[in-house]
Image 1: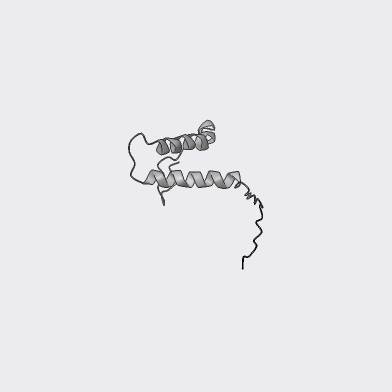
Image 2: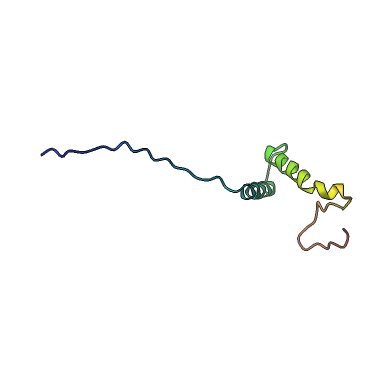
Length: 81
């Protein structure tokens, strides 16, 4: 007995919404910071990207005359700043 089959040519469209911009930006920042803590070769493009991001994010503090805490360690006192 031969079974009759019917093929359906149904096209399924998958659509996913883009992630919120803030989530993407924080994810990239987390990636760059984690990368910086790893052993890296001089002239690394990812480390250069982190440097650029730091320049932009800390720019408002430099323009207002407030000191930039570049070498602040966890638990360090802020009284010197």
